[in-house]
Length: 184
Image (cartoon, rainbow, N blue to C red; front, side):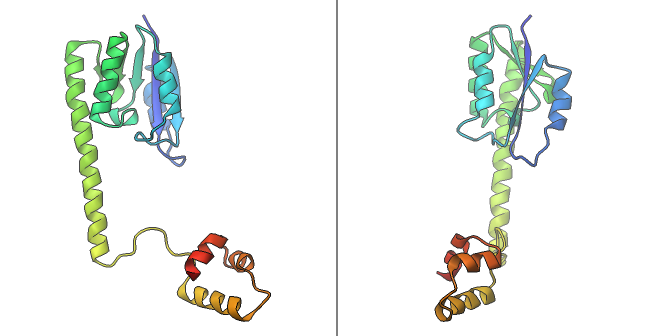
């Protein structure tokens, strides 16, 4: 019987992996945690090392499909590669094990559904942002400097020889680059 190694990932430092840890801890011999990395990132060092470390008879355990794979194609490709190396995949939330033909079939279907769900969410987000833009909403971070701040900064730079960009930026609590961009 091989090892059961759990992989869990959170995309940002603010996200907490506790739910995944709680779900995987009782299922696994060890856990590998990747933090601050999106599933779509070009490099996922912890995941890549884990795949390289797995040996025949081992089982890769993940909490959910989207915690480990970029797309349904990625999920299917990785599952096939693991299968060729005689490594199994177990997805906790689905109670799905690719060590059986039925598990492999269900896995293929679920990977496609997960990608559909991600694509649908992405499309809804785009539509929501576009609708907000049409209604005149300003998206993104709020401006650091008001029009009044920029006008006054420009006045000081033109009329007060001792005024510097660095000094003004410090007084407004912003970077030099932010002030320069606002003045342009």
